[in-house]
Image 1 (tube, one colour):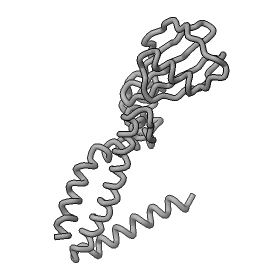
Image 2 (cartoon, helix red, strand yellow; image 1 turned 180 degrees about the horizontal axis):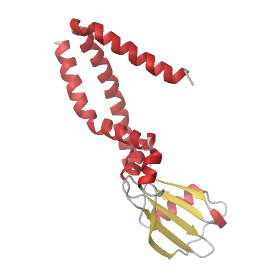
Image 3 (cartoon, one colour; image 1 turned 90 degrees about the vertical axis):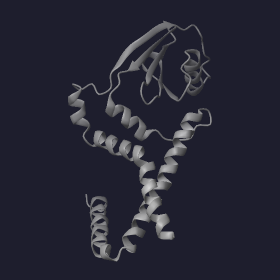
Image 4 (cartoon, helix red, strand yellow; image 1 turned 45 degrees about the vertical axis):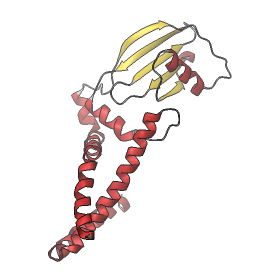
Length: 197
């Protein structure tokens, strides 16, 4: 009975993990061959185009944090969601509105009282990399927490996948010798990459 649970569990977990494994595998190809993809896009792997520029007369106090200012700007523009803000050139505040498919760069110029909203041109590798590096729980944005929970669930499923794989290997006596060989070879190669520079 336990063996049947392990076999079926191994199969169903593999089916569940398919989108996450594909995403992490393909995004890692992009990270590992970054220069190749940069050349494919003529050096512009991240390209922004102007979406809109409009007056923005709201003022902020010097004591207001960048976190507060960034949050208010995205709310005022109807773009509330995950974001980060930093101080740019000439006192401008740049807010990066994160989004897997269409992230935006918002530049607030307090001197001119304008905001410039730029949308990133879709690039498959950038999309996959954003998914790969999207982490953390956010009490403010439920979708971020849901994504983080799904990643945690995928991690737990991966541990089960590994355990059930070892169980299936040990259960089939005829595979023990070659299974041990592959296990030792994988561990040795991993150790080589970790400890040899």
